[in-house]
Length: 253
Image (cartoon, rainbow, N blue to C red; front, side, top):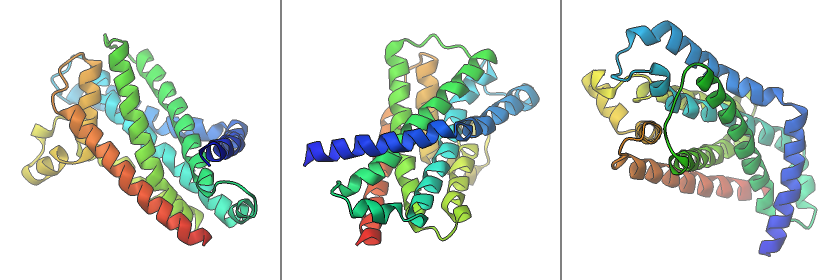
């Protein structure tokens, strides 16, 4: 059964990836908005923002990476919605394939597409002056956090992809996720924020994830931030996976 699942997922993943390669503009579009934000904040607002860091792009990049992922998962919901409306799911259900492999193929496609977008954003940041003395282990830790974060948000994207009534409805859920880093330590230190907003910013998932990535890049002690970040990512991943699979079973039953 396990072999059957992995084989079916690999075949369906190939199908989804072929769709991606035929429309690379979606990956480019995903990266354009975060890059535009990075350019604007570094070159327009950066001089007026005191973060205590020598380079604002170094301070900013972790938050921009999370915004990149939040932008990219909207396409997962869109692709799922189009498959649902196109009757592809019903066609797959008539075939002897593992049912969950259909969703996993979309999720893994999202992971591949978002990793490409993240690499593009990091390359642009390097051109803008981003520098890090982090070693291989630190970079692998950053990659691991971003992969977990992408999987968690992608499974959230699966839910509107399966339940939305329109194309706009399928992707609209991503807007609050894109906005969330603005209410965190991604752009400015939280201690500069007014009381209630500061409390929210310091206790929402993006802040701990951003702080962990920033400290890894800066070769600083990560403290408890990395464990809080991992707990948030794993917790969101588990909850969103359960809700997504429950929704999927109801849809195809």
